[in-house]
Length: 112
Image (cartoon, rainbow, N blue to C red; front, side):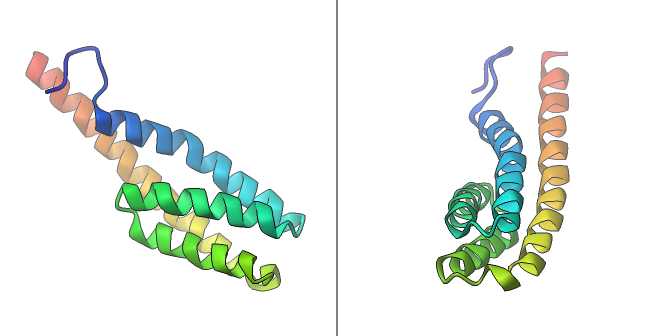
């Protein structure tokens, strides 16, 4: 059970994802601009795993797809997939932020 004043595991995992995902997306964007396949692959791989761990399966699948494209050196056609990644991340971010807010409200009500 969660102790008051100490974040639970979900809070830690969601918080970590919300902190690291924008950095990974920025790294992917920069690597695409530089035609750096290894950079795209690494950022996509990391985001793929962390998004899957939180149940963001569409985002994870898009990351898998762009990771494969990078591994095959097909960055010239990767931008539409990257744009979908940005869009799906925005949706995931909104959902996870609402989830975190809901958790905080529930904790406040319980402490009430």
